[in-house]
Length: 355
Image (tube, rainbow, N blue to C red; front, side, top):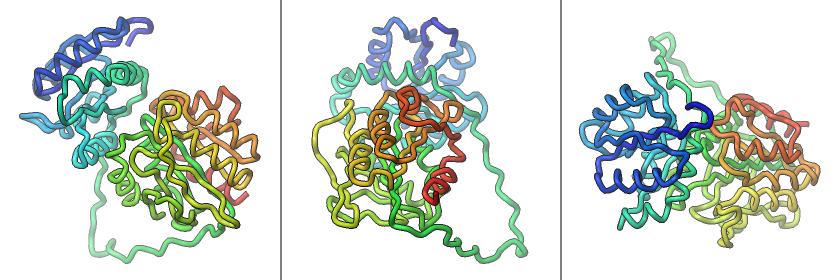
């Protein structure tokens, strides 16, 4: 995309109604140029070659080729920023998380009923996410090569060594666009006995259970949706349940989860600022705060409160962030002195926890 020129968008959806509504919504912004639409991935493939879009909106469930299969091929052969259009169902949540793992930048939730009116209600969000996608970083999807397994290579997995044991540290992490995969990378790098982790990721309410289960599968820690009042324990990571804030409160010598159904903050529920402010108040210098990739500035002020309370803080660096909105806002606010590449964040968090 040439700086200053409109973002060129191709809309891929098997529904003529959705194609028309998305075209009208996106074309209403002078910074967006809808250059075409396609009813299925095979038509889309030809239009991508011919029209060279900056961003694609892609429905997951389409005829002739599944949206995920198309996305995987696209990110491997011709990576482009993709915003998924997904349904607000449990199955839709799992499929959307797979799409984000394959390299989609973000997603827009399609209502189950009265799609036309529902999409119009999301107009501002749709425009914002498409424009953000045009500025995001995408990478070629590398297909992993499976190792050749022989009888000599089959052996019991070594027990994970205990590298850390304390109840005196609490790690708080916030993320948004690009964060579902960034959080997976960070949690994969933490040992089973790491300090307790409390997380906030901007997601629709119906996605939280599928997301917690996905992180749990990829982590040596136990990852779960928090329940109100439960103790915060080492080796566990806690996510807010759908559409609610997560806070941490002090109860004597321990911390507990507080699930909060209060109003949205920074237009988000859950909000990173809500979590960080509670951690600053309850844990202070015993906490460690981190902001990963995300759009907007949610969490920046909360991270500053953590820093002012004596907690070490860090943000994901610009090069490895899909969107350097939230981490960039925190860095510019002076909420951290440290920018860390995604692949080193888990190691850095453990180093700070030991320090």
